[in-house]
Structure formats: C-alpha cells, structure tokens
Length: 61
Image 1 (cartoon, rainbow, N blue to C red):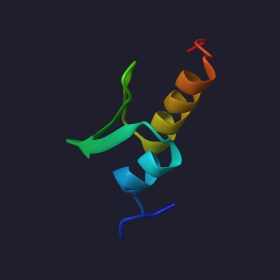
Image 2 (cartoon, rainbow, N blue to C red; image 1 turned 120 degrees about the horizontal axis):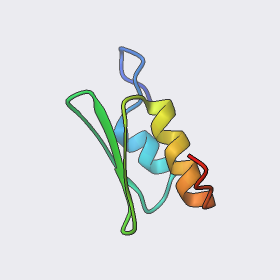
Image 3 (cartoon, rainbow, N blue to C red; image 1 turned 180 degrees about the vertical axis):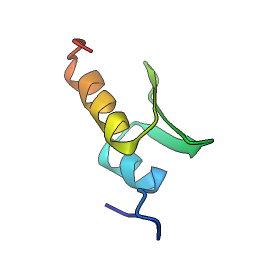
Image 4 (spheres, helix red, strand yellow; image 1 turned 90 degrees about the horizontal axis):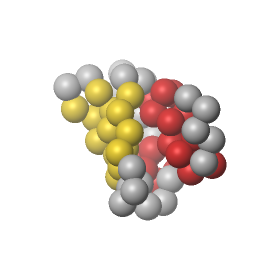
C-alpha cells in the first residue's frame, strides 16, 4: 500500500490492487470504475469494500 504523508492511500495504489479498475480522489470523494460499473465512496475502506463486492458479484449491499 502506498500512502501520502497524511496517511491516505494514493489512487494508483488502489488501482494497482484491482487490475482493470481506474481510481481517482477528488473533492473528498473516491471513485472507481471499470467498463461495467462506476462506484463512489467517501473513504478508501468503503471504496475497497465496494470494489470487492462488485468483483465477487455479491450484491447484498
């Protein structure tokens, strides 16, 4: 995991963990997308959880 001096993960570090996904952080919101879906979250942990649900096809959100 690659982090900033403030302890936040860099978007590319998250994208590296999930091939095929792009990630950005802007205006306090995290966004991840692949060709089939776009996800939004306010924290890195919530974004990672949403990506995991999307790739495991667990739609019990």
